[in-house]
Image (cartoon, rainbow, N blue to C red; front, side, top):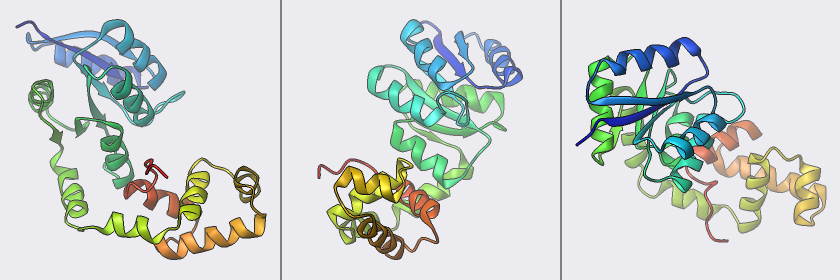
Length: 217
């Protein structure tokens, strides 16, 4: 079997070059290219078809979550490991929902990263110990996401999607052919049902709990 072909996406040049240099020390890994943003990452996968992509989260043009989602949909042969400094719940769950096969922090040792690459290439899923408890806590809240989704009416879910897209109440009203006051009431009900402090918090919770995924309605 040949070397595992690796691509690296990170907007910081030193990080990209440092990772490439470190991983190149392993004879079983081959670096096939690097990218400075998510759009470049998708183009790199299209051109080089790497086995594994190491993906940063915060990047210009297209962030790592969006790039992971596109790669997973268009080039499923390439398995994505998110490699980031952030262990926020929002990033963890958004990345996993987008199709990432691994989530590691940048303070990982080279040997651990190389082992994770091999594991993901072999079909396993890898989580950094720092984020494992987050996933466990979510998994042990039986039925909570489904219950929350059922508490929201179909119209409230439509309004929630508009909120997540950054639309104002007036814009949501125009999209759904509703009065702006009606949309304002829906937003208020959504905040109450999710226990959110404001619109941004509601969107954060909806993303974490998977309420923004297409539900067929």
